[in-house]
Length: 310
Image (cartoon, helix red, strand yellow):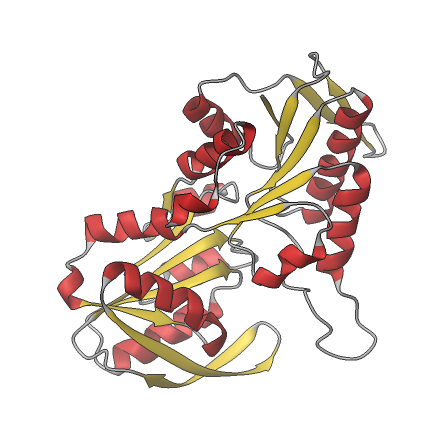
């Protein structure tokens, strides 16, 4: 087994390797003067079980191309099996045709990864579970819930906690967390008038005097979280903390979060944090390296991965 990484999140790849007690594979991923990507694998991978760690976060297109070219390089170097490990799967929000004459880009990206030569895919908290079906190769969708659950238990009095879904679509995820914590569930009823903007309409559930934990898979602009926090505090919540798997945090999202009424935003390291994220006083990062590392180890040894979440 060998683990390699592109330029997207080497810190996470190194942490995964530390968990597995293996060195990070030697590979050069660089650019020519015209920004063409060139990959050179600098050690023998013939007959090896290779894992490529590369979340396709900003800049998504560059990191996706790095992944595709690394897969091709591994295939042409006679790797026995190639697993693309995408802690964050970019383009996942384009998983359906929301209106006429639009693409299903998540399916296109799945096709590209498959045609490049990947034998299997491992990812974390897909925006929509059915994206697994976009791949014609085995795909493991890991869940960050065990990581988030441990963090919540170490920071909160569970007798006063209520788990909140930021919209109706996230109820399944929120209910799963509430079941693990054995606590109440609430839902934010919101209306989205245009992309990137939302207006909170109502809170379904009793949150008065409670520590509210918003749970979601992606935080991008941060507008939904901040609006939801305002609405819940107005309804009598004692505090509002957001637990989000993927901290995309584009544009002015960090400033929006730091100036909001959120007690804390907790994200994972599925996307390499920026300097602004690291310096934010109310943004905290928990690592997924042991979870992904254990999944990689079990995959290499042909053991059950799903039992990690039982």
